[in-house]
Length: 206
View (cartoon, one colour):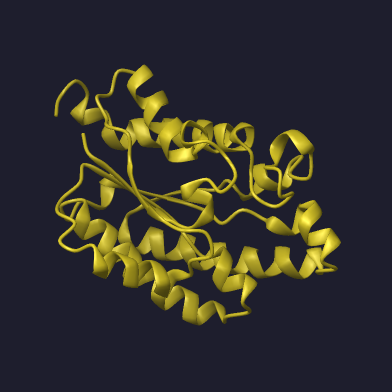
Protein backbone atom coordinates (compact mmCIF):
# COMPACT_ATOMS: atom_id res chain seq x y z
CA UNK A 1 0.00 0.00 0.00
CA UNK A 2 1.25 3.45 -0.90
CA UNK A 3 1.50 5.96 1.97
CA UNK A 4 1.71 9.75 1.68
CA UNK A 5 2.70 11.79 4.75
CA UNK A 6 2.00 15.53 4.70
CA UNK A 7 3.27 18.07 7.22
CA UNK A 8 6.13 20.19 8.51
CA UNK A 9 9.19 19.63 10.74
CA UNK A 10 7.33 17.07 12.82
CA UNK A 11 6.71 14.90 9.76
CA UNK A 12 10.10 15.29 8.10
CA UNK A 13 11.69 14.64 11.50
CA UNK A 14 13.94 17.66 11.99
CA UNK A 15 17.04 16.51 13.86
CA UNK A 16 16.49 12.75 13.61
CA UNK A 17 17.53 10.05 11.16
CA UNK A 18 15.07 9.00 8.49
CA UNK A 19 14.24 5.81 10.38
CA UNK A 20 13.30 7.87 13.44
CA UNK A 21 10.57 9.91 11.72
CA UNK A 22 7.14 9.06 13.11
CA UNK A 23 5.57 8.17 9.71
CA UNK A 24 8.47 5.82 8.97
CA UNK A 25 8.16 4.25 12.43
CA UNK A 26 4.41 3.91 11.93
CA UNK A 27 4.86 2.18 8.57
CA UNK A 28 7.36 -0.21 10.13
CA UNK A 29 4.94 -1.02 12.95
CA UNK A 30 2.10 -1.57 10.47
CA UNK A 31 4.23 -4.05 8.54
CA UNK A 32 5.05 -5.82 11.79
CA UNK A 33 1.31 -6.13 12.39
CA UNK A 34 0.88 -7.83 9.02
CA UNK A 35 -0.12 -4.92 6.82
CA UNK A 36 1.79 -4.58 3.55
CA UNK A 37 2.48 -0.84 3.51
CA UNK A 38 5.36 1.00 1.89
CA UNK A 39 7.58 3.49 3.62
CA UNK A 40 5.94 6.89 3.20
CA UNK A 41 6.54 9.46 0.57
CA UNK A 42 6.94 12.58 2.70
CA UNK A 43 5.99 16.08 1.59
CA UNK A 44 7.10 18.18 4.53
CA UNK A 45 9.66 20.85 5.37
CA UNK A 46 10.65 22.50 8.62
CA UNK A 47 8.83 25.81 9.04
CA UNK A 48 5.93 25.17 6.72
CA UNK A 49 2.50 26.62 7.52
CA UNK A 50 -0.77 25.29 6.12
CA UNK A 51 -0.66 27.55 3.08
CA UNK A 52 2.99 26.71 2.38
CA UNK A 53 2.24 22.99 2.47
CA UNK A 54 -0.62 23.56 0.05
CA UNK A 55 1.64 25.46 -2.37
CA UNK A 56 4.25 22.68 -2.14
CA UNK A 57 1.60 20.09 -2.96
CA UNK A 58 0.53 22.16 -5.97
CA UNK A 59 4.11 22.10 -7.22
CA UNK A 60 4.21 18.29 -7.07
CA UNK A 61 0.91 17.60 -8.80
CA UNK A 62 -0.23 15.19 -10.07
CA UNK A 63 0.24 13.31 -6.83
CA UNK A 64 -2.01 10.43 -7.86
CA UNK A 65 -3.91 8.18 -5.47
CA UNK A 66 -2.70 6.74 -2.18
CA UNK A 67 -3.91 3.92 0.03
CA UNK A 68 -3.15 5.92 3.17
CA UNK A 69 -2.53 9.62 3.87
CA UNK A 70 -1.45 11.27 7.12
CA UNK A 71 -1.55 14.98 7.95
CA UNK A 72 0.08 16.93 10.78
CA UNK A 73 0.28 20.69 10.25
CA UNK A 74 -0.27 23.97 12.07
CA UNK A 75 2.46 24.60 14.61
CA UNK A 76 4.07 27.25 12.44
CA UNK A 77 0.74 29.00 11.98
CA UNK A 78 0.55 29.28 15.76
CA UNK A 79 4.22 30.28 16.06
CA UNK A 80 3.63 33.15 13.63
CA UNK A 81 0.57 34.32 15.55
CA UNK A 82 -2.04 33.52 12.93
CA UNK A 83 -5.72 33.40 13.85
CA UNK A 84 -7.41 30.09 14.60
CA UNK A 85 -10.16 30.83 12.06
CA UNK A 86 -7.57 31.28 9.32
CA UNK A 87 -5.93 28.01 10.32
CA UNK A 88 -9.26 26.19 10.29
CA UNK A 89 -10.07 27.30 6.75
CA UNK A 90 -6.66 26.33 5.38
CA UNK A 91 -6.52 23.09 7.39
CA UNK A 92 -9.96 22.09 6.14
CA UNK A 93 -8.89 22.57 2.55
CA UNK A 94 -5.80 20.45 3.17
CA UNK A 95 -7.96 17.80 4.81
CA UNK A 96 -10.22 17.73 1.77
CA UNK A 97 -7.18 17.37 -0.48
CA UNK A 98 -5.90 14.52 1.67
CA UNK A 99 -9.24 12.74 1.33
CA UNK A 100 -9.16 13.20 -2.45
CA UNK A 101 -5.60 11.83 -2.57
CA UNK A 102 -6.82 8.79 -0.64
CA UNK A 103 -9.27 8.04 -3.44
CA UNK A 104 -12.07 10.03 -1.82
CA UNK A 105 -11.91 7.66 1.15
CA UNK A 106 -12.02 9.64 4.38
CA UNK A 107 -11.42 6.38 6.20
CA UNK A 108 -7.92 6.23 4.75
CA UNK A 109 -6.79 9.55 6.21
CA UNK A 110 -5.18 9.99 9.62
CA UNK A 111 -4.59 13.34 11.33
CA UNK A 112 -2.29 13.89 14.30
CA UNK A 113 -2.78 16.82 16.66
CA UNK A 114 -0.17 19.57 16.95
CA UNK A 115 2.32 18.91 19.76
CA UNK A 116 3.00 21.51 22.43
CA UNK A 117 6.40 23.06 21.80
CA UNK A 118 5.85 25.41 24.76
CA UNK A 119 7.13 22.76 27.18
CA UNK A 120 10.55 22.58 25.50
CA UNK A 121 13.84 24.11 26.65
CA UNK A 122 13.83 26.16 23.43
CA UNK A 123 10.57 27.84 24.40
CA UNK A 124 11.80 28.47 27.93
CA UNK A 125 15.08 29.97 26.73
CA UNK A 126 13.26 32.24 24.28
CA UNK A 127 11.11 33.66 27.06
CA UNK A 128 7.83 32.57 25.49
CA UNK A 129 4.70 32.21 27.63
CA UNK A 130 4.18 28.46 27.91
CA UNK A 131 0.55 28.79 29.02
CA UNK A 132 -0.28 31.09 26.12
CA UNK A 133 1.26 28.60 23.69
CA UNK A 134 -0.71 25.77 25.28
CA UNK A 135 -3.95 27.74 25.07
CA UNK A 136 -3.32 28.61 21.41
CA UNK A 137 -2.54 25.03 20.49
CA UNK A 138 -5.56 23.71 22.36
CA UNK A 139 -7.71 26.04 20.25
CA UNK A 140 -5.98 24.98 17.04
CA UNK A 141 -6.36 21.31 17.89
CA UNK A 142 -10.02 21.70 18.83
CA UNK A 143 -10.64 23.30 15.44
CA UNK A 144 -8.78 20.50 13.65
CA UNK A 145 -10.63 17.83 15.60
CA UNK A 146 -13.97 19.39 14.69
CA UNK A 147 -12.99 19.49 11.01
CA UNK A 148 -11.94 15.85 11.14
CA UNK A 149 -15.20 14.82 12.77
CA UNK A 150 -17.18 16.72 10.14
CA UNK A 151 -15.32 14.90 7.36
CA UNK A 152 -15.23 11.46 8.96
CA UNK A 153 -11.45 11.48 9.40
CA UNK A 154 -9.58 9.83 12.28
CA UNK A 155 -7.89 12.25 14.68
CA UNK A 156 -5.15 11.08 17.04
CA UNK A 157 -4.28 13.36 19.96
CA UNK A 158 -0.54 13.26 20.60
CA UNK A 159 -0.45 16.66 22.33
CA UNK A 160 -0.71 15.07 25.76
CA UNK A 161 2.26 12.87 24.89
CA UNK A 162 4.28 15.93 23.92
CA UNK A 163 3.45 17.53 27.28
CA UNK A 164 4.30 14.40 29.25
CA UNK A 165 8.08 14.58 29.79
CA UNK A 166 8.28 16.72 26.65
CA UNK A 167 11.13 18.69 28.22
CA UNK A 168 13.19 15.57 28.98
CA UNK A 169 16.48 15.32 27.10
CA UNK A 170 15.70 11.82 25.84
CA UNK A 171 12.48 13.10 24.25
CA UNK A 172 14.18 15.92 22.34
CA UNK A 173 16.49 16.36 19.39
CA UNK A 174 19.73 18.25 19.95
CA UNK A 175 18.07 21.61 19.27
CA UNK A 176 15.95 21.34 22.41
CA UNK A 177 12.80 21.97 20.39
CA UNK A 178 12.00 19.13 18.02
CA UNK A 179 11.15 15.62 19.21
CA UNK A 180 13.66 12.81 19.31
CA UNK A 181 13.09 9.42 17.71
CA UNK A 182 12.02 8.20 21.16
CA UNK A 183 9.19 10.73 21.31
CA UNK A 184 8.22 10.00 17.72
CA UNK A 185 7.99 6.32 18.70
CA UNK A 186 5.36 7.26 21.28
CA UNK A 187 3.41 9.14 18.61
CA UNK A 188 3.60 6.14 16.28
CA UNK A 189 2.43 3.87 19.10
CA UNK A 190 -0.60 6.12 19.64
CA UNK A 191 -1.41 6.17 15.93
CA UNK A 192 -0.85 2.46 15.33
CA UNK A 193 -4.17 0.98 16.55
CA UNK A 194 -6.10 3.68 14.72
CA UNK A 195 -4.15 3.08 11.51
CA UNK A 196 -4.68 -0.69 11.81
CA UNK A 197 -8.39 -0.04 12.12
CA UNK A 198 -8.37 2.12 9.00
CA UNK A 199 -6.25 -0.23 6.92
CA UNK A 200 -7.21 -3.61 8.30
CA UNK A 201 -9.62 -4.40 5.47
CA UNK A 202 -6.62 -4.30 3.10
CA UNK A 203 -4.52 -6.69 5.17
CA UNK A 204 -2.26 -8.81 3.03
CA UNK A 205 -3.22 -7.04 -0.21
CA UNK A 206 -1.79 -4.31 -2.39
